[in-house]
Length: 290
Length: 290
DNA sequence: ACAATTGTGAAAAATTTATCACAATGCGAC
DNA sequence: GTCGCATTGTGATAAATTTTTCACAATTGT
Image (cartoon, rainbow over the protein chains, first blue to last red):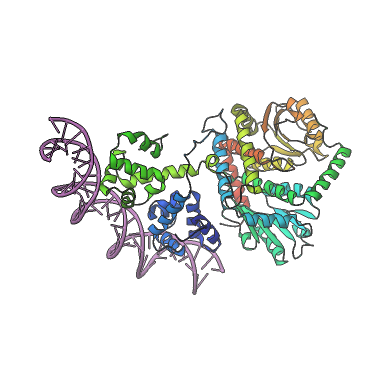
């Protein structure tokens, strides 16, 4: 029994950065339906991942296994170790609608995205990101692109209540260089960039990086080129039955971060919320309870 | 040979009585560490169960599989399906983090919100809403408030690709009356209003309603006062362990609508996407490939 | 244009599977 | 006890499949 604590999935994930394109493709495929996909034949795994047979063979050896069957044996050991209970049936989400209704199909996809995203996120990276974003001594810049600026703004609006000294930058606006005038070493940039990755966002990140700022990147599974500059990279699954990608998982991640940061700095946050309420009362922006 | 409902384990158990000594021994061994033990080699399974190779081969055929690999393939399919059942199996979402970590607690809450929201949504109302929003003959107004304008804009940006003749209105801007100058009977308003409900949004909805426009309201479980004016009301669960409410469910709903509408009008949408791609190419806004 | 990566097609090696005839075993009936 | 019968194991072997490894071509990124 070689590996006491680390599962093969974790082992693959931790090596993900050092992998090349085809290897990463293969890794993704293995993790996608783990561990079932790894328990078929080598050939099936290769074609399922869309890579060649030698690529699989090479990868398996890179992972430290002498042969593919040996690799499979490890997978089976892991599977054996996990105490398995009978499988509950899949439930329909909108029970009033048939399984094939888009409401159910789309929700299925999003839940699956959430599962995969959370499954591969590093809690330490997440915690570090929250600590950086919640650090009032570091000016905060939140950057989004053509679509993602809506997500960026969502984060911005909430962070605005939690802490001072932050800026919402739209990389699609040609005025963003002005926003970076004061950016300096140690500042924190939260950058949203999902496909199709935007040139402006990359350039902005390069400048920020050049000035020594910390970059936290929120991207998709194919990872924006910004990730090479990023200190922390949070990747999301975004594939759904639609012509566009889904931001629901990213929204979940953003809100979880807000929740975590607000808890870190609860005293200050609470005071600021109270002040805000007072001002709202005076402006009569909201209705009094109904 | 596909069994829709019965797992192989159940199938074996139901046959247990009619089995002979060696077969029962084998069956027990398979069920003992199911399904891992069945995914090794035939020989290993035989010796692990303490029976001979031909016994295993005979048994597999008795179960209705032509070959042993075929039997294994079925086991793998089952395994694959069990991993895809997220609710049942996953006690924790981010397995690398403890159950009490905010990543897991928050995700639990959001999944529960999704379940409740989808459970009470009326698919017909949803379909009618999609039909109205996708109807190009009806000018479309998308309205959001202080926070929700980010969601409104997200919907707006995607609808913009699908159809012409739409407007994004921010009820917090004091210029919104200008946007309503042309609003007339039969126009469609999608109004986002979650607590705390905003006076401006209500006033805006009242004016739109007074002019005979259709109002589709996206709100929370306590329902914005706008619901009295709304033709269709889509309510979401939004409670999470945070000082703020969650928009993740609303995001899911929006994206599902986009997907449904895009499918309704696929021909036109496809053309518009292609045109858009051309223009992007010319402006070099996005990176080529990867 | 170069270097690194990846794919192709093939063939050899290794393993696994399927099946055979026959021997051994167990078990109930007489 | 032993006969008859069904079940199971043995050991061997052929067939089928899978794995491993080539050399070289194609592709990709720099």
